[in-house]
Length: 157
Image 1 (cartoon, rainbow, N blue to C red):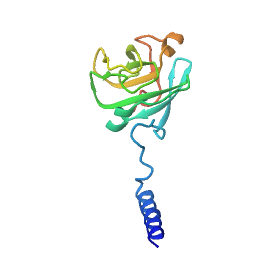
Image 2 (image 1 turned 60 degrees about the horizontal axis):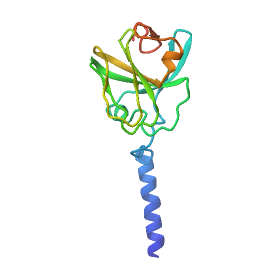
Image 3 (image 1 turned 180 degrees about the vertical axis):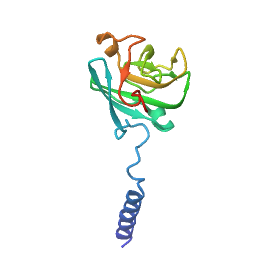
C-alpha cells in the first residue's frame, strides 16, 4: 500500500506542477527551444531569429547547443542602449556577434571562439546583438555599416 500511496503522490505532484506551469520549466544546462521567433533581413538574406528578451534568456543564449541551421540566429534585446559584452562559456558553436543600433545598422562584428571567457564588446552603446554561425556575415558580404531589417528595426517599433 505504501508503494501505491507514493505513486499516487508522485502523480498528483506531477499534475500540480504541470498545471502550475512548473513542469515545463527548462532544466538548467539545456538549450532554449521555446523562444519567440521573428524574421530579420540582411539585404536579400532572411534570418529565422529566436529572440532572447529576459535576463535568464540572455544568460543562457546559445549555450549547450550542438548545431544551428545556417539561416538561423539569436537576437538579444536589451531594455536600453549600453555597451554590450558577450563571451562563449558553455557555448559549443563558433559564433559571430553583430552589435546592432536601434535603426538596424551593424555597429561592429566580433568572431567568438567556443568555450572561452574572452569578452567581445560593442564599440558603442546598443540594444541589440545578433548571434549567427561564425562566417555567416562574411559569406554574405555584410560588414559594419550594413543594415538589418524587420522587427524591431522597422519604423514605429
